[in-house]
Image (tube, rainbow, N blue to C red; front, side, top):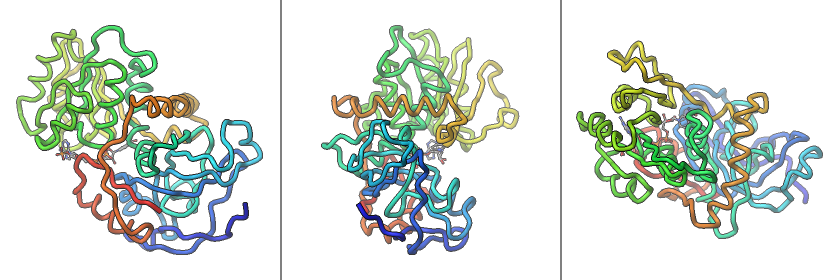
Length: 344
Ligand SMILES: NC(=O)c1ccc[n+]([C@@H]2O[C@H](COP(=O)([O-])OP(=O)(O)OC[C@H]3O[C@@H](n4cnc5c(N)ncnc54)[C@H](OP(=O)(O)O)[C@@H]3O)[C@@H](O)[C@H]2O)c1
């Protein structure tokens, strides 16, 4: 298949601003695959990169689903062929300024993508292949070291997903249900039914000052809370979640930096640990890379067997041109229990 030299891409034109431009395709690493992007999903990290990280000219976008159009010489024999539909995530524009997903072609390593089932729309695959679900996988299985969905818990295990209506939270609840945990979570009341349907046993309002105490008491029947994921990690959320732990304490995973010394009084036997999903993109972080690769080898079957589904999607119109407005919608904090997806 002949490929163009240039393609259309959303790029940073100045700090905080993006526009569609013609630019070179990202260079294909001999170990990589080149993918024609069919759909993308948005994450808060995309606008944060536009506002705080990327230089003018850099490509944007992290989550994608599309079709493989080229395979590097050293990527042969890794389970993928030209024409295969796949999904995954990258760190748009930050590691290679020409490699983003809000453009016609993206490149990544074969270990970092998974086969999209034919019945799954590309938009759902972009949402499920992306940063949110992968972060939930990393937090639950590679940081908290909880039983994985293909070898679920055999004893009752309570888990708190604080801020369950975030994209990371919704996927964490779905995964934790597959892993056989008993799940408590928090969200605005309008999202409670959605989270119960996703697998939560208890859903409380994060604005309820009694929520930590109610979760602590609920978890007593399962031996007390020892594991939590705080998917918001802002505005004192981690301290609230830490107060739900049982007398033994335990570990809480955060998605942003949380300094417990600035969150006093803090329960002394609850340890916060920040996770960062980009670590899994680098082969040098061997355990994280292998962990996401392992998940990518399982996700297709979970979807095909109807055990794992996508989250509510907000289909944004306008293709590449629509993405600047979509980024702004996310930047303004208007996203609630939904994932913005765009068909390219
Ligand atoms: N470290 C990493 O690797 C990593 C990976 C992914 C994401 N993140 C970060 O994690 C955060 C969440 O990302 P996301 O994509 O999951 O978010 P998202 O889907 O955009 O989050 C939207 C949700 O945030 C909830 N929310 C807002 N303020 C809240 C508060 N004070 N307490 C509890 N919930 C609140 C809202 O809940 P209601 O509508 O129910 O009120 C809404 O549903 C972002 O800051 C993102 O940058 C980090």
